[in-house]
Image 1: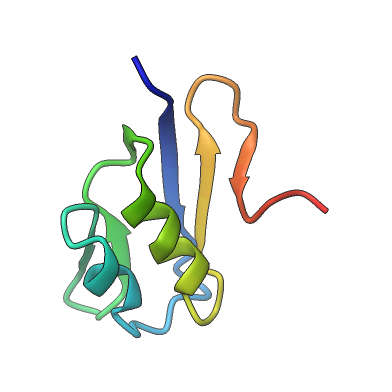
Image 2 (image 1 turned 60 degrees about the vertical axis):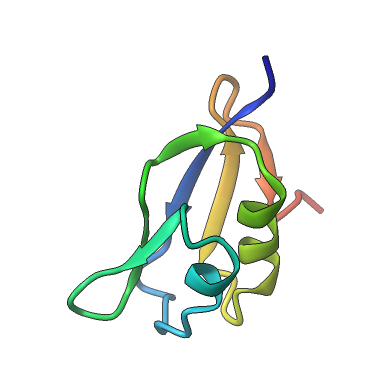
Length: 77
């Protein structure tokens, strides 16, 4: 069994660019305020979700390992 990720969107940063929805349509949705939120806060690790986080223009997507809380994105410096 692979890693599980916990996905959060910082709604104070989200500008509704839709980059996440375009890159990982199964993982993100925009709400009526045009802000992103994860479809499921805990999901299987996957390249589309990581790509969505990496391409968010305001780095509003935070990914951690669901079990340990260890950061996946953004990586710790």
